[in-house]
Image (cartoon, rainbow, N blue to C red; front, side):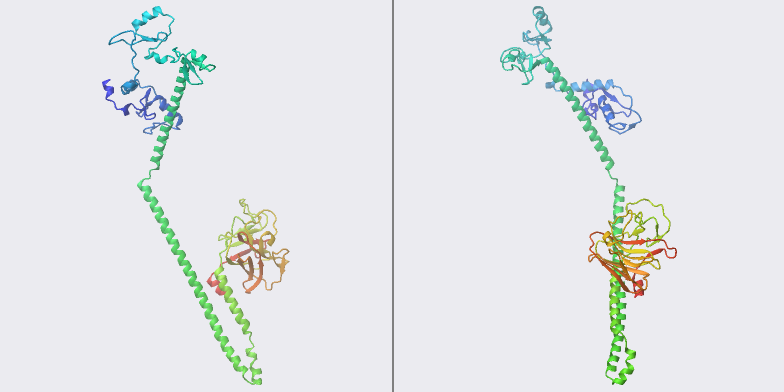
Length: 508
């Protein structure tokens, strides 16, 4: 007992139920637990491991009760038990004076507790009296109203009653013997105790899981440094990209300024030349009629028309330079008869079917490919080299157009296009189609889109002439659209032309 008194409470506590050991067992790592606690823990855990040190075992260890530790735990429970919690001793009611012996039985008829000696005398005379384990204050077991023994339990009122109570206040109430109710209540208490123990184990397991999660979530200084480094590099990359974008915008602005200044200089030269010619014409106009008729022919120039073309040409080129976009073809939309270049700026009719993966955006029947990026606002311009190819459509299409089966290319179906049909000439995709007489044949076609105005215009780039403008109302994204009707080995490719300052000035 003395050795047990030196033990600390933690030494005899189970770390799962947090109570003194009950049937303690030892596992291979050296830690001890209640037998039911460790078995319950392993039953709900995917691994056989120690709840304290987390050491895992390949199979469930063989365990047996540590009898020495069990005795120590039992002794500790007795020592720890408070004096007021211990069952009080019941003394014999018959014995007198100090040092009365303990009672061994109580008589429910005599309402007296007897020691072993006086019980012999009582048993000899009152063999039919009902005895029970010794209890103090036998009066508490009597009905205060009828002074009869409380033998029954009223289920309705949840109270102990005597036989006479069942004939008065508790008439017609369902009653059972107090011993049966006591057994039932003890069984319920045991079940409640088991449930509480299970709740304790569940919460202990949850605590262990949370501790384990916290351990896993601890970030090492190295991981912190790496995270800071990653975000630092990301910020630097964003700043570098921003600087490059600003430089590109400034460079484009400088290019536009140089280009505009060059055009202005050329126009100013033309203005000076026209002013000089205008002075000469005024001088000739003041001469006599013979001299006028002799010199008029060299000055018979359509200067107004030249000036108008120069002005309109410069303005349109400036507009094209501002609205120029880089159109890239979308391979996921390309019909299997079509082959795209590596840079996605050229499309070729192979004349043979390719085995391409199925895609919801792919045109499976009609030989069409769409641009990768669409428009929902703004003005946009690009140019397409069609060369001598005889069968093609180009323009824009709604993003929601049908991609499967036969398709009618018309504005009513969401296509705004210029077409060249072999043997039929040029047409636009109105409904019905409108035929156009174009001479010479355009080899390079410019496409201009103004989303807000619902305008799609086509131009002959080489001839610098307007071909046709379609007007409509756009309500969704539109995409550049290309349709190669059939294979012509002589010219089976059309290409999207790059647009920059040099090419535009060269065209001018």
